[in-house]
Image (spheres, rainbow, N blue to C red):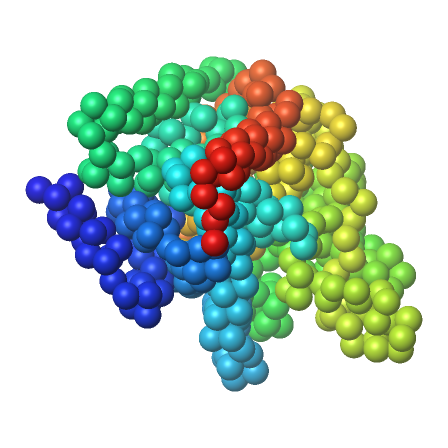
Length: 508
């Protein structure tokens, strides 16, 4: 019954006049966005994309296909990335007016990648293979071009399914290809010959079973080191308020010292910018933290300065409270953490846009692995860096774990923090590594190499939790090769489609 209804909807959509298709495409894109966290309605997402695929097959020429793709993408990103308005609502009086412009600009801008993907797919012929390959390449372009922004990829809708196992082989791009294949296959199952539809269904079921088979069993040794996650829950509008700063710091001290009647953890982790003083002035603060920790190493976030440059940093304190390692965030948020071309503007005398305290951060030298004593080696990540799979492969040494500190208070409480956590789970699967994730307002979590959340602290609650660290796996295929195999396969598929299409009738 549900299939027949979807078929009827799709046929009516395909028969609509061009002027009505664009609003419909935008609406379908928004429905497809419901596959993202926290909604997780992946079947609805695939069904919506199936109708979009039907519209694509009816598009007359690459220009109309491009507009169709842009409209679909605009609706998709407007819903998926609706959290982007949250940072502007922290201080509504000053920045609230920017919120709608940010949402419209971001969703419409990112939709250009989808428009290009639809156009490319139409040039190679309105076939499912070209559609999947072209949109997979569009997602790849969104990952790498202009510093990249791979948030809310179509494949992220499958993170809570058995298909997630395929990420260990091909990363998020393979998941996107699976989601898009499912959408186009659903349309052909409903409209194609029974034999062909049956074969398509068997292939999709096999992919699902294969993903489940690729998912490793939980593996946390009985003698695994224990990590304490500290979540102060400092709302962004209060975090730097002098009237509240000490309260949140004292809360972290209390959580660090808690549990006197139980064995001490092997590591304590605070979130991003948890210490309200600059590094060069922080030793008295570190002494207080070390005393509360009771000779347990502590990892925390704070800011540091070097001349006129300021950095968003992660610091490890050893058992004596001495700084043992420093990592500077290197993949910064454009306009949020730095102004593009800020150094060049400073040379021109436009000082307001230069990277200095109050006007942005400078980027660190790049990915680096730090030692955590008996726990092993960790790859530090600060907030936004966890959404870039390529950054995790940039370190010269393979770590034993991923260590993410973040302040998701900027993302509000509706969808942003949940999507950020989902991408962290995906990174663990891609690399075959556990992740220690500590967030200011949540969701702090321990994630195993299969992307399972072993333990967590809820969004919007202060607290602490001691959690054993799962064992890492051997390097996955994705950890060795990255996105290149998926990109090359997509290019090859498009090339074959283009050759076949030119042998028939050139696209208009």
